[in-house]
Image (tube, rainbow, N blue to C red; front, top):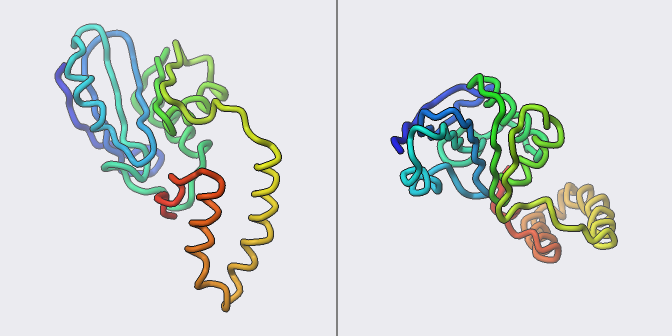
Length: 179
């Protein structure tokens, strides 16, 4: 498959996409956290050009796509994906997502199931059951900890506090998330 790199303004952000194929099946793959569209190059090179049109964007803040101006959650990324699909004038999309990209794909599918042909999740976040006691505990800890860490004498422990909390919760990727 011949792969082209394109740059478009999507959701106000300068965004990088890899696009391959000329086929009728419209596929959008979303990469995982700390990754980029480049992880899909080898897979794309093995697919026939005439059966698929495959779009793999760098999600905002990853690869070549600009960082969002504010802290984004899954819903913001889903809104950006919907803007991407609208900007490219595609419909009846086969949407796939790996890890964090899978979580974003789940949000997109829940909000706009009518324009999806299929949903493909692989090693996806967002599908495991939550431990509600643990979640409640850490939400309470965050409510107490955030104001405390804003006090001038406590600012020096902000980074250490984040590391400890993220290690305790088992969410180590958030340490690399930046703003």
